[in-house]
Image (cartoon, rainbow, N blue to C red; front, side, top):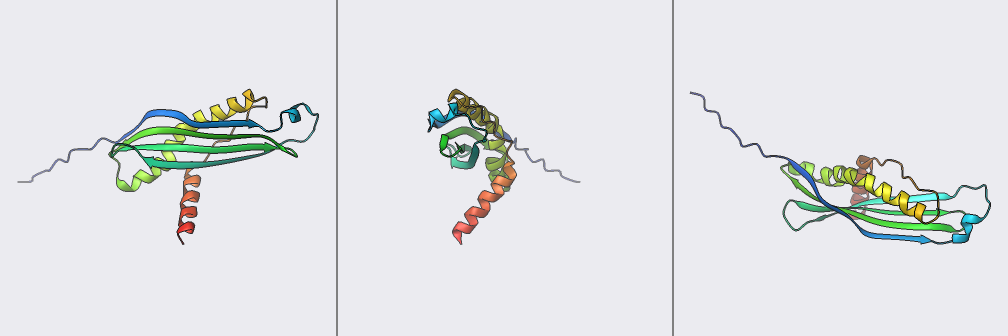
Length: 153
């Protein structure tokens, strides 16, 4: 007689329970530069970081996309800082998949909202909208991991 043991399959859950701006700052550093005639294009610098913190329950997490963008000609034109956070429930995944889910998949879900907020804020500040190019969160995750490993050494 062959006995089959049926394992109860655990359901995998990746759910966004909330998303919000934790912080948004926009500084129009040189408002009169917008009206000067110039043929130069501004230099745009965008830095993005993913932060993860444990939530209140064992399977909840807060994932933040922290963006700093600035534009310069000869002087700074604007500086934008945004911290956009999503609260997630992540359950039923193997332990080795948890970190990639939090640092890759969760930011992918938040990014379209971050991109829209930045474009609208810059536009409302009197400049042409700043559309951030799509981000490869796998590469960003690997870079952050390498940076953390170098810091430990």
